[in-house]
Amino acid sequence: MNTTRQIPSSQNESWGFWHTLENQANKAWPLAMAAIAGATNQPFESLQLFLDSRFGRHFADDVLNQLNAGHTLPDAINAATQQWMTWKIGRQTSKDYGMPRGLPYLTGFVIHCEIVEESCIA
Image (cartoon, rainbow, N blue to C red; front, top):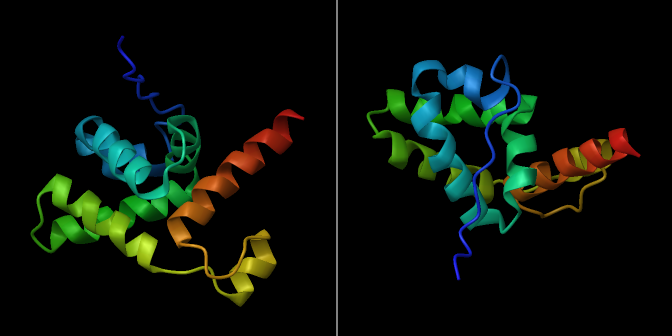
């Protein structure tokens, strides 16, 4: 039985992660989805919402910083993922977004994007 799930494509190529990485986006998207899924244990659908958001654009900026430091694309994505997992939700971010303090930044904003999407549908 094949349990491999299809990685969803970007629904916002004019903004977010995809737009920021421009000519590398096609290769970077599945790498980022895999790295973030491995780090956060969140579903691909939530990751797609995160990467298509303004937070995905900020994540992509950190990937670009790693590329400019000489890392390969896969290593740059993994480094940015680890960086975002190292950062923790602080008092002000917790207050602003309703996330628990101490939660890894990446996990918090992936979940936040899913909650925002669900509230728009409801």
